Length: 358
Image 1 (cartoon, rainbow, N blue to C red):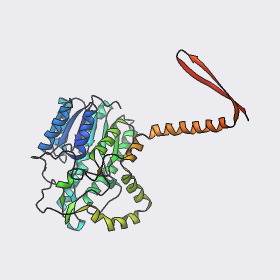
Image 2 (image 1 turned 120 degrees about the vertical axis):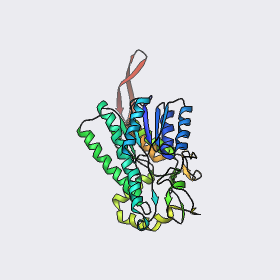
Image 3 (image 1 turned 180 degrees about the horizontal axis):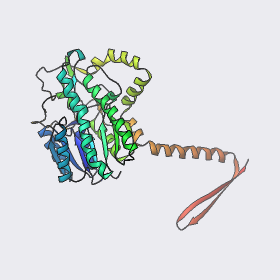
Image 4 (image 1 turned 30 degrees about the vertical axis):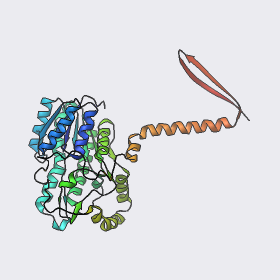
């Protein structure tokens, strides 16, 4: 897909992955609509995008409100133009053992993290299907495949997004629609969510190492919007989680039972007075930006993602190297080699090679 001068909608774009993704699309020459709750974060993101010379529309909206999401999409099309790409990224979570979770907490996480994706997708389809054009990118997680302790509501929501997206994809294929959907499964990321997530843990919450910067996620989302991929696994840890759960789920259960609690906490005690964003945004007065507090431990590059993005060229390179190796073996058995070529204008073309064997 040619992805310049397009209109891109990103939910949860006031901070973290959404913020980094918005800047990525703007740098690549696109106009961006920001959908999130936090006013300060939205305004900060809007300033960043407009400083790059692109148009930006910032809309304060709670993605758990289907009518508000649809109204936001309508406003985007009126003010920026037809929506070409829709990225469903908004999420919330609760760090807590299941036995301590409340019913309304499960309801809220599900409404934002899962139903927010459904509502965003419906708003996008309503406008893309009549035009028979557009891309929807679902921001998933390795936890869409592998549930871990202390994040049951979030894991369940990501599992639900996976099933919803698979169903949608098959329907689009059945209808021979040119609207495309891709799910991008993320590893642990250095985002501000760990500074505002609701938690009952004794120590501060952290992403399970190894940790990647949100710009790595943004690169993957941008690639998903511009290439024909069904799904993208970001980072080797995501691949390991997916394959490990398929090959040895019982063993994964045991490992996570032993390491899942400590791996999601730092050594620092949790601030009992820390505000959380489950019900109200934390970034209404302060702009948190894209990064969390783990810059000194986060990686700026994923070799596995690079291989994923460049697999077509790597395939051609493999074919070329194989051909070169075969030619080398052939020529090594010759005592005399004659190369025939012809010229057409400024081009020289090898027509055939004659080998006189030893």
